[in-house]
Amino acid sequence: MENFTKEEQIQQSIRLKQFRHQRGLSVEEFSECIGISVSGYQKVENGQNAISKKMLRSLKKQFYGSSDYFLYGDEGNVRGIMTEIGKCKDYEKMYILLRLVNYFCVKPKKNPEINEWELYQKIREIIK
Image 1: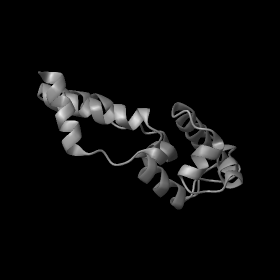
Image 2 (image 1 turned 90 degrees about the vertical axis):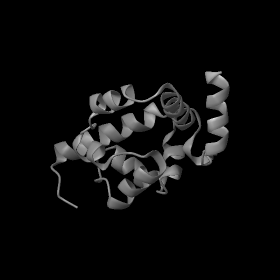
Image 3 (image 1 turned 120 degrees about the vertical axis):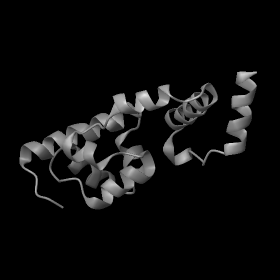
């Protein structure tokens, strides 16, 4: 893992805290989700310790979080994604919407894998 300046480490901790707040999770809930002790997580969120590879892997696994975002602030190409979604058929857009609703409305630790068939049925009901 590369060495970051203290300022970069502080920026990383700010992004991590914002990410946690956006999901409405307490420090305790968030640290449990990513498999790190509360005190260990607090040290990272307060800028005392750097984000570890283990934490980055957990963030990606639990929240589909981008390492580039946490380390460098790169949020990716949202416009490109929106352009691609715009090319989709209506039922594909509905599928994407339902997946996003499931992702953002259910806490990750309680989020079972979506049953694709049930999701398909819901889309058909809405389209009719």
